[in-house]
Length: 282
Image 1 (tube, rainbow, N blue to C red):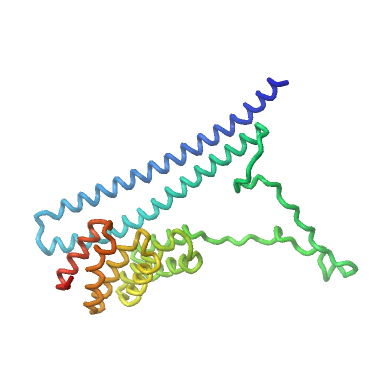
Image 2 (image 1 turned 180 degrees about the vertical axis):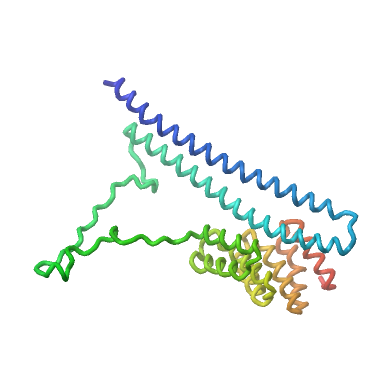
């Protein structure tokens, strides 16, 4: 009898282990693909930097414009890669927890509430039926919630990706609508900070510098500790410069390296260059 129990346990564990291995392998392949895309993007940025040597001032300005567009695309893709990696890691953690719960069920060990949905579902009340009323009026029992048609709603990730696709295609109005939708429907989502920054970029791209300044300022104030804090203050300064507000622009450029000492070198260098061009005082 003991041998049969061990055999049944082994048969139950076999498909479970295989499913976990397949899931882990698939998730690892996705992570590897994301990392490979990142390496390709880094090589492209380095190659574009080398191509600028020996060019005329006009050519350099043209290439800088092209690099700015490419950088915008790469930053957007990096944002999505970072989000996808976090999502994959969360899926791996869920799979590991599920395997642990099933092993304990097989071994007969007590299972703690891990949020995996192992508790028995609560029985729903039956729909009330009107007594003595004509069937034509009542229509039998009142429809249950399960009988109603499901409403398909897009996730924050889907709307955000649509916004990134739009801004990369130069459709700034559409991009602004998508990023606004993320901020309105999912204000506490982990993509909200990025959506706020790209909303500013959408306005900046269509030369609506007043709205761009407001968006970047809000992103700086609300998501200062996020990964877009330095980007927001830099583009806030650039928006103010385009609006002819030199003092406000200088404040942004001069304070960027002070408030964000660990910001990317290209952001600090850009702020320093803009400050020099405007002859800002420290």
